[in-house]
Structures are given as structure tokens and as C-alpha cells.
Length: 440
Image (cartoon, rainbow, N blue to C red; front, side, top):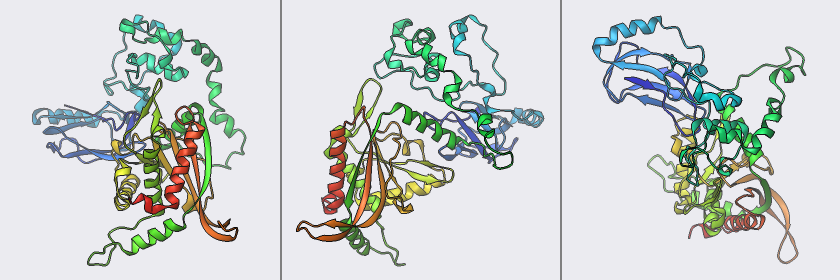
């Protein structure tokens, strides 16, 4: 039985094997861990689903392979010895991209006329270098894999095309005939930006160190560039007085139950209050609890809130599901667990995908305010700055000092208009300034 590189999420195209738990020729049973893989987001152990002998290891530890590639072979005891010997004599793979074929868009029309290339015996399963979207569009139309790739490379919106294939299926010739295709082709590779050689030519040799991009940094660069170029952002900023929130937080933490060793049952953070405030705010302004979906808007029943977590060399956004239904202590406990597993790269794809809104908090770093880039498919992201003591005017015309927290809401204008974004931000501010309302 072939052991394949699993897919850990719709946008994951490849994985790196960091460790093999079994050696070639070693017996395996169902449930035994075979190897550990690391993607741009998570690290996880892959168990065996069958019994037998690990006859071959085709992708050694430290190598990267595309999703669907054969990384090993499990055989019965009879064929193990010969296969293990063949594995030792097999040369290591040169590149995980070896099994990927990239045809030029200009040759797409003649793709069916060419003889099919023989499959590489090392990587039997061909996998695209990236995910180019679902085969079925929200409107019901279907798209061939080649058409999805060509449209993704050319920046063409498939929702605007009418397919000429069977049952209205969008095929490669529809992409070639699309009005945008010519304009994108004229832009050429130069539209991406200067090459590495052009950038390096601006600096003295030996004055810098080259750091290769890992999978996480590539994904961050691709997704946030896409977000900045395709999502029409606008920003709303306000300041919230968190004096009552700080007092309530301290009182709640002091009253937390303790175990026999004196450890508190929970310890609430300011961020826990902000998560709940945004979750309740989306319930009170339901039109903002939505995402853009090509030819329609999806509005959600529950508030699923993503929270940006800094990792070594990048970040990830785990999601608190149904946050409006959870207590502050439950949110705090879940957030601590998600952060710990995120930094250990142990999150499951379902724990960092989806959601309609997110929070990015840089206040602990002393940042007064900032504007965050929306992480697709979210429609909003709340940027939280540092709380500063400021002089404010009181209701009777006097002056007092208060702890003011900067809040900046980034909005996707396709989903959230200015007035709607302002209503959501004002609701979140009221909840933060009157935190007792989050408890009832």
C-alpha cells in the first residue's frame, strides 16, 4: 500500500517530513505513527492505517513533497526484503516540484492534442503548486483544474465567465478568451516586482545574509499580498476607556477558585474581554458578521473570532468558535490552549480556518495604534493598541485621567459599508467601556 503525503487544509500544497518513526523493513500496525510532517501552519504525526512492513521510504526526513506524493510503501512480510534493498539503492529526490507540470497558458488550447506525459515513478500523484479554488463555484458552475490554474495565474474572476464546455463547464479556452487575459499577459512577470538579482545589485556584496523563505513565510507573503491587492480596505479608529474593564478583570481574577497548590482556576486577560466584546458586537450588528464569497455574501449565525498569534518566523490565526456563547473564563482557557498548540505547530486545520472577523493585539509591545490587513476570507479585523493614561474631559467640564485603549477596525468595503463598520465599532466600544454587560 502506498503511503501518501496528506493534505492538511485546502490551501496546503506541500509538506516537509521532519522525522520517520519507523525504518525500512520495520513492522507496522494500524495506529502506529509512521512519520511527522510540517506544513506552513502545523506539525502533526501521521499514523498507519494498515498492518504490514514498511518496505520503502521514498521521501527521507528533511525533504519536502507535494500533497498526494507517495512518501513510502507498506507491504506484507514477503515483499519487504527486496523492497527495502531497493529503497537503499534509490537516489534521493532532487525536488518536490519534480512531479509538477507547469504548462504555459499559451499552450493550453492544444493541451488535449499532445500525448500524455508518462508519470514519474517517484511521484505518482501530480499536485498543483498551490490551491486554485474549488471545482464548483458558488453559483453552481463547474471549472476544470486547468481552467482554475490559468484563471488564478491571470487574475481572472471565474464568477464573471460563462462556460462553453459540457453543461456550462468553464474550460481552458474560456480563460484564453476572457477580456482580462490579454491585459494581464501584457503586464508579464515584471508586474510582480524586481527580481532577487535586481534587489541584490543595490547592495554591497557581503553586507547582507540571504535567508531562504520557508513555507510559512511564503504563505504569509502570498495571502497578504492577495488581500492588499484584492480587498478594498477602509479603516475606522476610536478610543475606549478601559478603567471599568481593568477593575472587573482584577476582581474576577482575585475571586478565581484555587486548587490545593494555590493555583488559580483561570486568569483573565484584557484580550479575553475584547474577544467576547467583538463576538457580542457581531451578534448585535449581524450584517457585519459576514464574508465575501465571489457572487454573494455569506452571513453567519454564530461569531467565530480569529486571534492572531505570533510564532517564530510568522503568525497564525486560530479561531474561537461560537465565541458569543462562551464565558470569559472559557474563552481564556481555550485561547491559552490554542496559543500553546499553535506555537508547537499542533493545531488542526479546522482550528485555524474560517471565521468572519479577527483580532490582532500589539498593545503588549507598546504600539499605540495600527491598521491591520484583513486575512481572507474575513471581512473585518480589529487592531488593538496599547492602553495609555490620557487626560480627558469629564461630564461636568473638569479634567481627569483615564486608561484609553486604541481600536482600529479594518473593513472589507464589499461586505461592510462605512456606516455599518462604524456601528460595529461603536458597539464593541460600548461593551468594553461597560464590561458588566458582557456578563449578562
